[in-house]
Length: 449
Image (cartoon, rainbow, N blue to C red; front, side, top):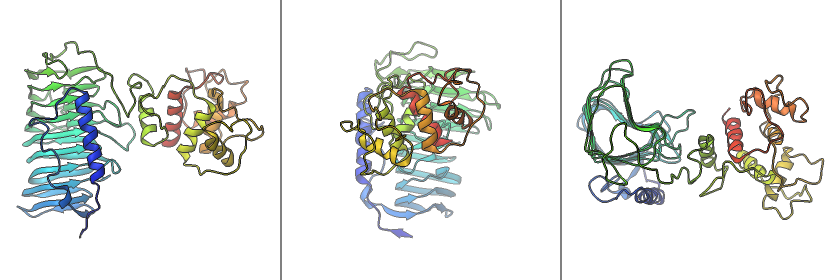
């Protein structure tokens, strides 16, 4: 049933403006065929379709809809125009059989993060904006993608594997051109801008032409997944951004490579060659976490609204007791209280957070002082986490340095819950100050356990 659409235009505008800003920061122009006319052609014409929609009529035309569920195609010559689709289901748009043409579509919603953006065989996709899914394009056979923007990849699952374009098997005779393929976003660098791996079947005749590619462990990953090296895979006249964890290309066979360049300099980008010095990478609004081992935990903290920091997170800095109170209060969404429990937090901006923890019994009130500006130790953090998340008691641990610690039982509970593995195999270092990066890891593991 069609209902009057709810307006999300301010949200779409903010996404668009943020993307334009990021493109300019990367030195990528928003002018030209690779960026013009992407997404919905007439947002104001959308009407809401609540729930998934399956199309089984040949020649059907689906247009001017905001589909809050999966769009599944099981018919031939289906035309989809000016349609926005988002869902937390495993597929957002899937051509299961038949064929379809998509023009001026949007896939994804920041508050309804999905798993797969769009995929299937016998598809033509033009002027598409794809975001807030784990994998943007699931490439099938006889697929043609032109002027598609994939960005801000995200996931609600554990161990996300974000790819702008992914082909796991049986993809043949397909083209992706004039598109923006960025695997970075709330998850960090993602896995790859393009991954073609024959996990499910042989693959051949796939061309990437005149695209901007960025992010990933390797930006491009083409390998034999069990059905042979993908054949006749070509990369022609593409431009590469500065962000990746290991290198530009990972492959275990030959690929076509011609006229590819670095976006920042215009100089040739060669397979196995050195990469230009990266510009400062902003991840989840932070410029200082790209090289932190706690990067993914910090990104998750930002997603959950537990950290309000911007610009810099300072992952190696020590956490104060007041800051820890704020983190935990936000993690648990604790209500405020008018009761004042401590004498020494009157001038602290964290007084409300501290009192909220005390009211819940997370912060001990046996003393009338909380010492909000003191640095928090790892042992103290263990106690706060155990009380906050009501963790069951633990018993043995491999840590040889906690025998005399008053937090021995709390540390054992953390170990049993899988929240800590210590500072080494045999030490927990309970007296060491805890860092902001470590706090992110403690909290994320406690929340996601």
